[in-house]
Amino acid sequence: MVYVASARPASDIARCLDSRLSRVSISRNNGVTDLTIGSSSNGSYFITLTPSNSGSVIKVTRGTGEDPPEEELRFAIARCTT
Image 1: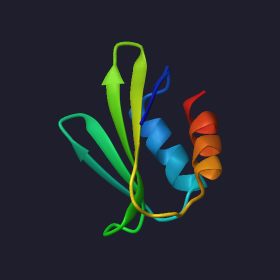
Image 2: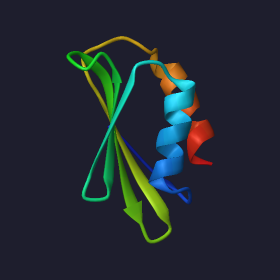
Image 3: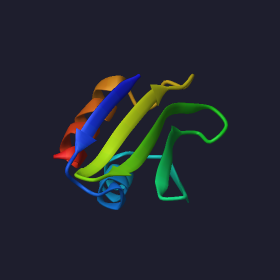
């Protein structure tokens, strides 16, 4: 599990990750944005974007899938949260 804080709004981060990674499913509920990376039935990563006073808090948990590789996901998160 990884927690990251960003000054960027959750909607910007979600758009950025969607453009950089394949098979991204996005849902929104009560201001929180959830992303499933990989197949919807066998997600590789689950990302929760929660708004904060200074931007967003990003929580990443690992699923059971293998796509994309962890390095690719970390690179995309680094690019999309700065």
